[in-house]
Length: 167
Image (tube, rainbow, N blue to C red):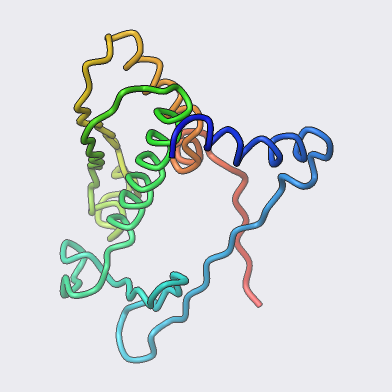
């Protein structure tokens, strides 16, 4: 897909959202069921069933997916797609590219061992390895726009309103 095709595909959507902002409001959903036999949650991904469990650092077997890894994987996926879309729209000459995310956790927090230890990531680093001959200012622009339009990055960066309930 080139810039013209991408812009042509997105133009009617952008116009519809300008005309009626409510059309742009979409609710995404995820659903899982708690495993009755083990400490795990079966998550419906739309493509397959993912079984998330405890990380080995919290007593897990390592056979199930770790939700922390899944968060980083979602960030990599979203940032990668966003980078490619932005590069396409900018007619940025991009060869091979990889995206890596890593995050630092202190499991004392999630296990309740130390009240001063945070629960969750202390730091997350997102890195792009780009094969390009584009000048540094174009690379900076690509990264700035990718950061700006990546849904997962912005969700982590700007805490959304969160609610928890039970039925």
